[in-house]
Length: 399
Image (cartoon, rainbow, N blue to C red):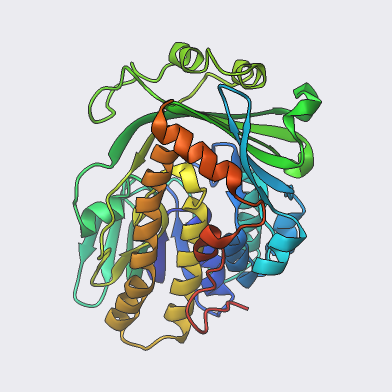
């Protein structure tokens, strides 16, 4: 049985960011990952100023920016009429307000930067093909047994193992995630295959009844990312099975969209679909020497583009508390939850509400929504301040 002080279960964005933050504060940390190797699937990711703040604390923001695209606007379009509903200016007024830009990139590029930084740190140990299967509390330590039989004894265990976290099961055992009946198709295409009318300097969201399409360039503008989401009419309660949300339904749901949207849908990869899940917020995700972060603690729907940002905020706060906080671990974890749980609960709840707001059907509610959106200014950032302006509690700098 291997002995370690801090064991992080899960080598995704949150797990690696936490390991890097702890190592750069002088703490040895061991990361285990279920997959055969460290890597990220999916496509693009949007990173708002609160995510940039957390990444800046790690000292990796310049490396990350070398892969990024910095859109000038967020544009909300009606996918049926082709009408612009509203926009947000992401240029100089935005930067002046929040101190960090809004940028987009490929998820794998973000993970690669974090992975390289972790591998350069002697205090970080990384092991793949180590899926945590069982977590056993002992008086002074916790023992984690992996699917391959490997065992680790740790003073602190942090579950960063995602939506279907086995660490969460050991702490809460609160059942399966909640399926929204929506499904996503994601992918990138070479930028040369995209029409110039696509808007290479913007993040564009095309919304409609029970559907939306998000488009933006990634990887220094070399690729064009698309995410198509729709509510399946063939949804089976609980999200089990693979007979709903299939590619033919993707085409059906966007059949009456404008040409630009249907063109984008025709270029979507059809090899994999992602059913969309979240959970109801909880106020406690800690037990004894074990706690959670990211999707393991607070999985959320994607509509606010805040999932990775909230995980990164978690890592900034937790790394600071574990290195600068009191020696009493119970107090550290209680403080971490008190700072993070109310905020992430609000984001989880608002993400659901925002999805409903996006996907309204034609009628009085949509007409009222559209009129309100079209009346707003592109530099009206009031509703975004709570998300984008977060800089953590005092003394969270990881530099």
